[in-house]
Length: 212
Image 1: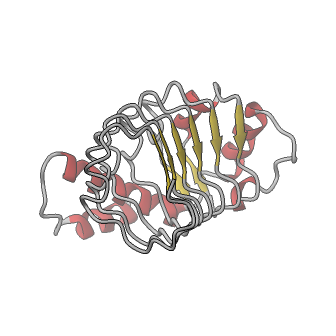
Image 2: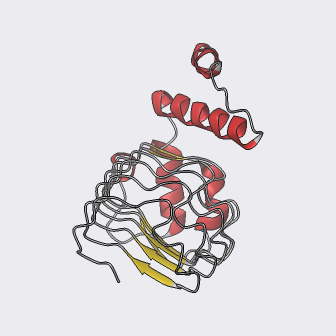
């Protein structure tokens, strides 16, 4: 437990000797950046808590080797977005709490491999776009909180997934600027996945999407 230890930086090998670690709490520190391979050696990691830090971004491959991760908390940070593939390898993910950030969109396929997800809270963000394909997973949630976002302000304080879906269809699909950024991120992720490290042509791709 490294809770409230005034940690400001995590290094690539910070946890290299903790191969059997199952739970890691880094809550209430001052961490602004996490290297993409910081948790590579934690093959048995099941729970991670990153609440109350200064994170604005997290790498898309941060949990590439943490395939047994079940609990992910990253509340009270400054996240602007979630990488398209951040959860794709986490088939055992059961709980994700992402409240009190600045996230604008939940793109389609963000949770495509998370069939075991039962708890998702993302209240007090800046959501203006929620991809409708996410409801394949949302419909099986046992606990959820999407309140206090710009496009869910019409939700009652107590609501069900059907009511959420109705509000999302009405209010959370029309922000084109966010949608263009979402598509741009999707192109970036696809390029990286295919090993194309040179992304110089992405601005042209984004411009073409906006024109269309």
